[in-house]
Structures are given as structure tokens and as C-alpha cells.
Image (cartoon, rainbow, N blue to C red; front, side, top):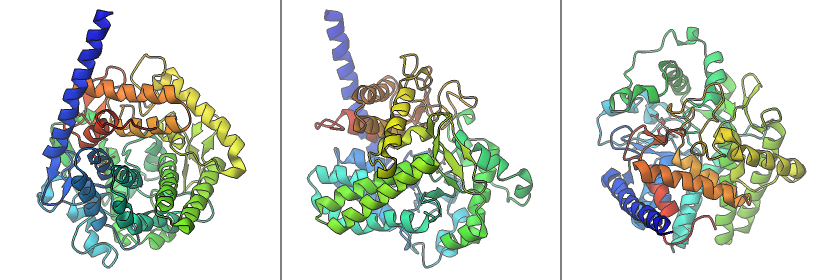
Length: 464
Ligand code: 2M8
């Protein structure tokens, strides 16, 4: 009994230290000159869109003025069509510090009049998880920030509805594997390697990968074949001035209706309903309710994979669906909209996803650390390679919240406890080996720190 008590106290002490460490990491990665926090001072020296949302969420319980500044600076880089680029470049660091940098994207020149003239950015986007950050800030007593952010969030979410949702499917497509944030997810293998053969890459200009020289083991990073294709897709988009209609009509080298991205858009629409209601914007709340509903119906109709028992991805170019036991396929747990015409199906499918979360493949039997991005036993599983198996704190955070929303409180707590254990043992690393708990990627990683703080260090209980 005494032993248990001492263990409990030791764990509390460790968490206390880690809370302090989380705040320190965020402080060290903060850059006053751009008013935002870098994902990592070495590997990622610019501002990333969904990282910023997670960082601002964490800052809501640490430093509110930084939380607001993060989002303000990111949305200063918003394009006139509503797109928030996945990178807003940091002018303080040399061009050689990150690949592909400003010289590759050339946003202000290639998308003149649409991309901002005063901040260089990438030409692709990220999942719209910023609504959650704005709600956290509002809940910390800053309702006025919802007012301030409303037009910017509305432009961003409307961009997905107006520019990225072709009427025939009603789904949102991604046009680069970097857009959903899971760079080398195995779900990209078919569209990338079958869709873009080596022969298309003959004229690719030479480039230097900076990520291989930043102290991270190259075995943990995406392959050269992946980078070649990532650069090729970037250059094809740039040639077309990043014009959405033109890219779509000319034919995109890579275009996928991805379950993870679509699920986060539904979740974004749901949070817009919440924000609109708090701001007494009933017509806007109704519009977002309808968008969430219709996107959820399209997901039930087109993305569910009965054989695998998860939501899959649909390739725009081949109309083929691929599914894998990857967190991508579990992501529809994050939203509660049922899609009224498919509600019964949706209920059954959520039950199937929950049984997968409880299964050994996703570390449900206490055999490994949930949630691996790819289930053990899947052919391309790697416990250390980036988005092909390791546990990430942001996907755990999103899924833990989703599980709680589905009423699976025990599973939600198990996923949170896993994140806590991994960080308590090793610190603020980028990702973790689900089999051994070993840390990988860069250290001093901001979203790990921010979401650890949001989950375990603030006074108000999470996800209630
Ligand atoms: C990783 O992606 C970038 C490209 O956007 C990279 O590998 O250089 C991903 O983990 C992505 O999700 C994340 O937003 C970014 C910065 O942390 O790094």
C-alpha cells in the first residue's frame, strides 16, 4: 500500500516537472520577432499551420497573449481565397535552414494577388484545427477573441467548402501528402508511387534535404522517393499559379479524399456551429450544421471500407479506395454529426472503430503503447518511421477527445494515459515507438509540449 502511494507521488512529481519542462520548451521555441512558436528550433524553423493551432491550444493555459499572437500571425499569412498555408515562413532564418523553403514555393510571385505580398508561404494547407484553439482561448475568459477570429475562420472553413469540395462527391480533397500533416502515411503509397511513376520525375531539379542533417536519425524520416514526389507535386502546383480551379481542371498529379482530413473538416464545421452560437450568429450556425451534415453523409457513402472496418481514402484520379488500419481510418471518431440519412450505419461503424481501438493491433491489450499511427501487423508497419507506426501526441489528443465524445471514456483515458506515460518517461519528443516507448524524431517539440500541458497541467479537467 505504502509502495503504491510512493509510486503515485513519484508519478505526480514527474508530471509536475514535465509541466515545467513543457512551458520551458514552448518558451525556448518562441520567436518574438514573428510572434509565434516554432515547432522545433532545429528541424522546423518556420511557422506551421496545424502546429500553431496545437501550440495556441496549449498556450491558452500558459500565456494568453502568446496564444492569440500565434493565431494572429498565422492568419496574417491567410490567402485572399481563404486558404491558410501550411507554412508561414520565418524571414529571420537563412533559406538553407529548411527544405523546401521560400525559393521553392515562391508564393508571393506565383500566386500574386492571392497570396500575401509581405509574408512568404507554402502553397498548400493543413487540417483546420484552429477552431479548437479559439474555443480554448474563449473558455479562458476571452470571448472577444472569437469575435476577432470569426471572419478569418469563416474564410478558412468556407475555402474547404467552396474550393476543395467538388459537387459530385461532396468530399474535401487534399492535393499534397503534406496537407493532412501525415507526410509519409502508408495510405499515400498507391497514389504517390503508382500515380507518379519515376518517368514523370526525369526533369526534377536537384535539391538538398535539410531534414537529414538536423540530428534526427535518417531511418526515422521519409524516403528519397517520397521527397522526389513531394517536390514534383509542389512544382506542378506552382506552374499553375496555385490556382485551385486551374489545378483541378488541368488534372492534379496527386488528389485524394482523405478520411483524416475530412473528419477534421467536419469537426471544424461543428466547432464553427459552437462559435456561431456563442456569438448569436444563428444563420451561420445553421449553415455550418448543414455543411457538417452533408460532409458526414458523403463520408458514410464513399469512404467506409467494410472489409477493413475503417474509413478509407478515395483516389480522385483512379476512383479507387485504399484502406489500412491507420489512425486516418479511425479519425471519424472525432466528430459527432451522424449524417441523418446514414445515422444507423454510422452508429454500427463507430462500434467497429471502437473495437479496433480495443484490439491488440492498436495496443488495446496492454501489450504496447496506444495509439500507433499504423496497427502492428499491417505490412508497412514500422515502429520508428514517422507516420508509419509511431505514436504522436497530437493524434492521441484528437482521438482521446473523439473517444470521449463517443462515450468511450475508458478508451479515451487509456489513450491519454499512454501519452502521459511516454512523455513522463522521455520528455517532449516528436514521436514515440509504440513497442518500446523509445523517443524518436526531434526533441523540444512544441506540439508535444503544448498538448501535454493542455491535457495534464491545467487546472480545469480536459474533455468534459
Ligand atoms: C512534418 O512535416 C514537414 C512538412 O510539412 C516536414 O517533414 O518537413 C509533419 O510531421 C507535419 O505534420 C508537421 O506539421 C511539420 C512540423 O512539425 O513536420
